[in-house]
Image: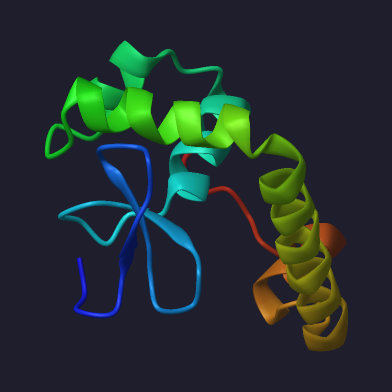
Length: 110
C-alpha cells in the first residue's frame, strides 16, 4: 500500500492515490479479481489457487467491496473495455493476424 492510499471499511481493501480499490499489501486491483471471477467463473477458492500470494480473506474482502460498489465498478469495467476496443480499432490488424486470416500461415504441426 502506498503512502497516499486510503483505507476503506473493508479490512483488505484500500484506495490508491487515484481512488482505485486495491488489495492491501499488493499491487492487485479489486477489479482484476472481479474480471477473473467473471471471465473464468472462478470461485474464491479458485482465485486463491491462481493467486497463492493472496489470502482467502483478501479475496473475499475484494469481492465484498465489489458487490457493495458494483454499479461504480461495472461502469469502470465498461470504460476500460471501450478504451481497449478503441485502441484496438486505431491500431488495426497486426501483420500476424492478417496472415492468419488470409491463410498464409501454415500449420507445420498438423
